[in-house]
Length: 240
Image 1 (cartoon, rainbow, N blue to C red):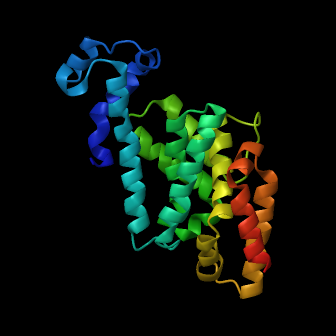
Image 2: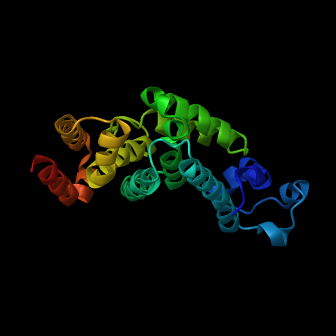
Image 3: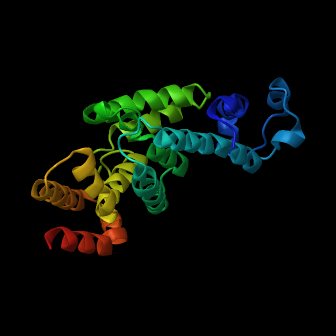
């Protein structure tokens, strides 16, 4: 997998030909020639180009993986698999239901908590700081500005579940997936309250139970349908 900085050429192609790809038309041979790419290397049909576009998502994922593995990540090694990857999974499921743009949802899901991963002190302001990091990362790879803004809006609004009609479908998907993760994977959040926040037993359990209940109450119905069994199990665990 190539690092983020190696994606400029594919990203330039994305920026210049996004409308063509969206319409399912052929990518201009002039553009390919201007970028110094061979037809055999890049592929002419939009489906081939979209495959190249996936390099952006893969590179962002690798970037997040590396940041999570860093010693400065005070959220712990489990944060990647027990939260971020779960948000990606649930976000994708909701995107299918709500006909949202899957790529926007996936990029935002990987990046929505990048600020506290890099610096735990950023936690109280992490949506806004995460937007800054995401914009720098995506703009540096020539990702289309309109799509950068859509990813940014998702990250900025992710802390409270957005209702259907209350924002873009991608915002609804990410914010609900983030809330779903806490309900569905309580083991990581037990680590968070006792290890990261260093709360006492009763205080930590009460904090997590309140978050589970408030998240559940705010979820859209399609999100509830996906994790209703997990909600019952987690609530029973915390109330036992």
